[in-house]
Image (cartoon, rainbow over all chains, first blue to last red; front, side):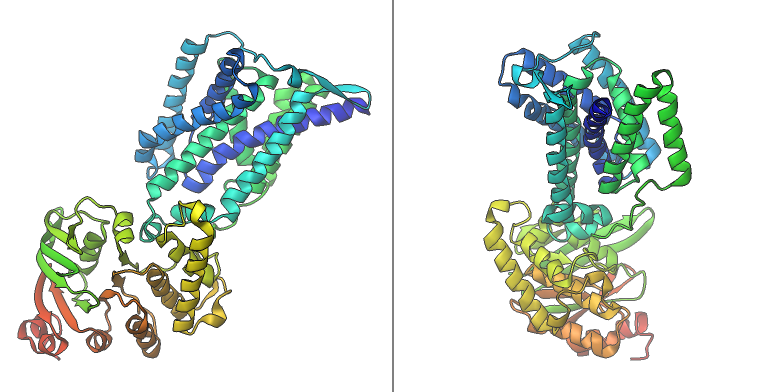
Length: 289
Length: 247
C-alpha cells in the first residue's frame, strides 16, 4: 500500500512538471497559433541556470525566479527576432525555424555547460524525506507538487479571468480590432512569449532536482510537452492539465510494472487515446473572448 | 486648425493606382460622408488614415501632428478610432464589459494595473452612460455575441465611442440594418458627449445625405466633389460618375 502511495506521489510530481512545461508550450500554440519547438531548450536552460545558481552560493530560493527571468528574457529576445516575423506564417515554416534554433541552442548549451550530467547542490532543507505510511518520500518532490499547483492556478487566473487575458485572446482572434482599441498587439505577444519561455525555464529549475540536466534532455522534454498538449487537446487549459497527469501516471507506472517496456507502453497508451479522442481529451471550444 | 488634413495621398497595388492624390480636411466635431461606387478607394483611404496601410506618397496630419510611421494603436491612443465592417471584439463578454473594457483600455487601465480601481470605476461609468444613451441598459448583461445583428452594430459604435475618440472612422456601420435602426444608430453620434468628428462610409445615400454636414465623393481614386449635401447632389460630375444622372 505504502509503495503504491509513494509511486502515486512520484507520478503526481512528474505530472506537475509535465503540466508546467506543457502549459508554456500550449500558451504560445493556442493563444498565438505559433509552434515553438525551442521550448525544450528553455526548459534545459532553466535547469542549467538553477544548477549554476545553486552552485554559486547565492540564496537558493531565488534559483527558480532567476531561471524564470533568464528564460523569459531569452524568449523576449527571440520574440523580437526572429519569431515576430513568423507569427503570421504557416506551421511548417514555424517548425523549421524553431527546430533549427533548438538544435543550435542545444549545441550552445553543451558548449557552455558541458556534456556531463549536472545535478544541483540542493539546500539541506530540500534534501530530506518525509515518511508516508512508513515509506520515505523526498521533500523536494512535495515542494514541486505544491509549487506547480499554485503556479497552475496563477496562470489559469491570469489568462482566463483578467482583463489582460481577455486582451491576449482577443489579439489572437482579431489583431486589427484590438489595435483599434489603442493596444499594441506586438507588445502583448511579446509578453506572452516571454511568459511561456519563462515557464519553460521555471519548470526546468523546478525539475532539475528530479531529472538533473544533461544534453538531450531538451528534446525529451519537448517531446513530452508535445504529447501533453496534443493528448489534452489544443488550446484548452484543462486539457493540458489532464494530458500531463495521464502521461505522468502512464510513464511512472509503466516504469514500475514493466520497466523494459515503459516507453512502448506509454506511447501505446497515447496512441490509443488519440485514436479514441482525435481532438484530445478536452476538445477545444470555439474560442470566445 | 483642421482636425484631419490629408495632402496628396497616393496608393497603388501593383499597377493599379487606387488613390490618386487625395486632399481632404475635416474640422473638429464635423460629420463628413465619404461616398463612391464600389472600388472607388474608400476602404483603402480608411486603412491609410487609421495606419493599417502606408501611403506611397502624401501626408496625414491629425490635430496638427504628422502621423507618418505611427501604428494603428498609437493613432487610436491619440483619439483616431476606426470601426471595421466585421463586428465585435469580445463576443464572449457581456455588453457592459465590452464597453467598460474599451473605455478602460483608453484610460490606460490595460497596462497600468496600479490605477485599477479608479480606472475601472470611470470606465464602468462611461459604459453605463453609453448604454443609457443607446437605450440598451436592459441588455447590459447579455453576451455581445448573443445580440441580434442590429444591436451588435450599435455595440460596435458604442465600443468606439467608449474610447472618447476625437475622430471616428466608421466603415459601413449601418450595413444590414433596417432604415429606422440605421437612423437611430447615426442619431447616437449626434447626441453623445463629447461629440467626435465622424468620417462615415455608407451605401445608403439617403442616410448619408441626411446626416452629414459635408460629403466627399470618391471615384476611381480621385475626389471629384467635396461640399454640403445639396451642392454635391447638384454637381454634374457626381451625377455622371456616381449617381448615374438619376439624382
